[in-house]
Image (cartoon, rainbow, N blue to C red; front, side, top):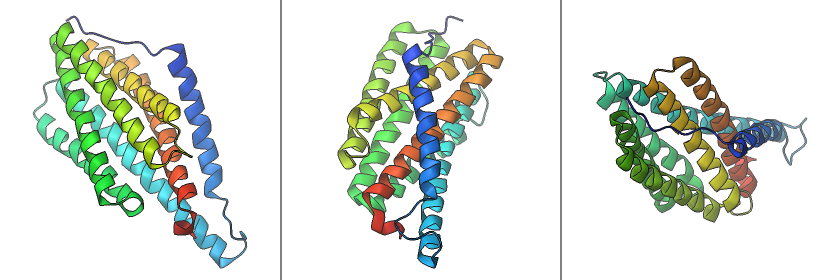
Length: 225
């Protein structure tokens, strides 16, 4: 089977390291607040921030987990593929709903729509790769990365101070690069590499989730006191 593949570039690996540093900084920020740490208000503030970080991490872990399960089901033609796909699409609704309290219902629906396209185009990429259809693969891949840039632009516009456009684009492209490599190795039957790929995907998405939750906390500090 001729499966189109893509290697993670040195720049992508450097961005992964940066994402891990961001995750560490985000973890430190969980335990800092404007209130005195010894007061009840300080403890409640830390709890609110920690809960929010955990909730955001859970959403994005679901994103990569159900994506992986869909890749596995597609590669092996498992009968659960459609059910897994439905659960994966539900995650995009969950992520959109998570930002509604901060950016409004319209923004939440827009993010869900962008993320839904992210998944549907990814399915096209995966199917074309499995079929060895290079032309269809390259077409879907180009649209997938364009959609990733659209997601980055949406996030940056919502919180430009904490989510600069260049950073958001780099994070989204890293996510796509790593996911594409994971799918490629799975389809090729290179399971050892596929497992390593998922570890990289997981580490990166936790950093990305912390970047998002930290940005919202900084943009809306009074909501976490």
